[in-house]
Image (cartoon, rainbow, N blue to C red; front, side, top):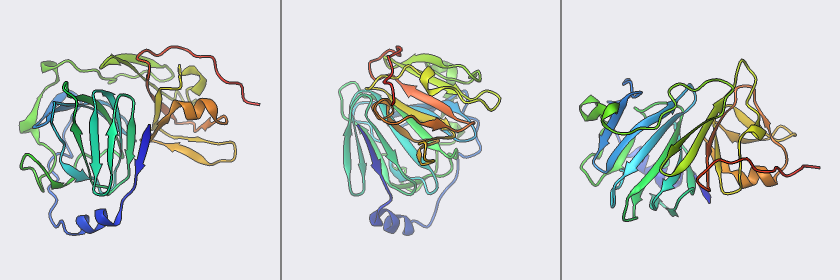
Length: 264
């Protein structure tokens, strides 16, 4: 299941009452650090000109602040554990390979409700850590900006899965939280073939860059967005833009090729 939440009147009203934003974290290099949080920690898995992909390790009962991004879309995918993502007007309980797309200026908070905590992928677009507005927080960070260098640890202090070197034109797979995570990007203006990704119906796919469109030119997926692989496997063929890049999460744990449906 992938939910989609848009900015509501409650979001707009709450955002209009916040006068001060403290952009403390926007110019840092996050490529080799762990960012300590009161609810756990996070680190940067991959970044390009369009998206930043972060891995969030949320401890049992840990909860992110009720926050929004004025100009940034956020997509979340749960890899392990159970979470509840709450917005000002809706609540969404998400388990493994469930996701949610949260549009800009939409307040949201995510709490780990399983006994082992949760591992969550966060895809942000565009890339800007300073775009953060905290409405409320259980740890006293209301109104504060993103964590500065005093909260950063060397990336070597914890095991991390990163795609810092992603060769163009190749589908690269790594294991994280018991699942295969795969990324691929265009090579010299030639997009990777969607058929080269081992999609199965329980999987989730997202875009690192570019778009996916129907034969009529309708865009169905943009950079930073996610969708169930089942919609691709069952639907009409989609055309990638030349600069497209793919992000894939295996729903069955392992990325294995599948026989494709023939479109007629």
